[in-house]
Image (cartoon, rainbow, N blue to C red; front, side):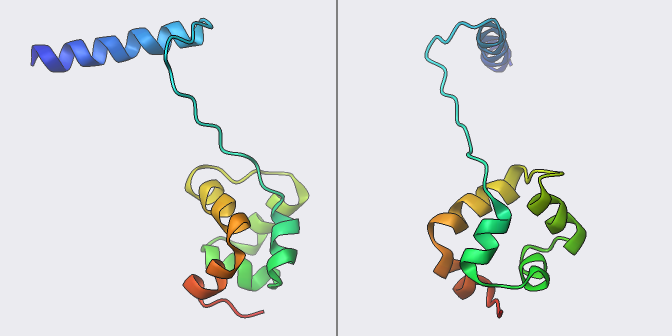
Length: 97
């Protein structure tokens, strides 16, 4: 139990130090934003097909494309991967235009 406490304590201290601008060996991962409308056009699928393949509503896709909302979390990661390998999208998700 003491090891667990010390590990958690160390992690919290590092997080506090980072928030105060001290970057002592901390790894920061930035996921780049994606122009969803441009990406969808590049892939050549309809908004309905794209939304269905991602399991999101058409309205959510429209908000992403207009910049009213931004994809986050796993969706953003998947969009970044898709941007790099668009053919994989069609293969993996069996999307039709």
